[in-house]
Image (cartoon, rainbow, N blue to C red):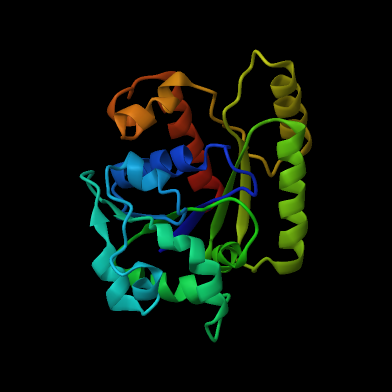
Length: 247
């Protein structure tokens, strides 16, 4: 099972829409796919029309394999399941800190799912925390959506500095630009300069789009209501590039 985590220190950069759309593409291509909504805000659960609720909360979930399996939900899309959000996730840092291996608590929970799923997507909350460090320990591909602004670049540099000290050997970081508005000069300058100077950045990005924002109204991936749109094509190209770069 390959684990893709969608993460940024900053909030408001499109992590949830990215997670939902890429997981949908993974499942549509035939991969058995699970998406875990790790954010207590529950955006992914909302988009996929699943109640953001874990029976017994994190106390129950952290007990082990059987509890995790019992919390999985079907989304209504072929090959795509969801481990929902729960408001109790706000206490997850403190609960992990009490365990004997605090950096491997989440990895322990998902390890038994490897035989059932080909791909696992984690929609991660912003910030740097013990939950974040657990994510870094278990992740194969860290997808970092960024708005092309100086503040986003500063947050990305902080992330890189953090990972240099703590990253695991298997972790591959793939940053890309999201919510790009070509009518804004700063967006044009940043995307051009960074992409040319830093080949680690993915060449494909995602534009600022009313169609993508409409996911909050439609409560579904963009491919269900705007399949032939340029935005949908851009997300397909992004996913194909991620697959190539993470092979």
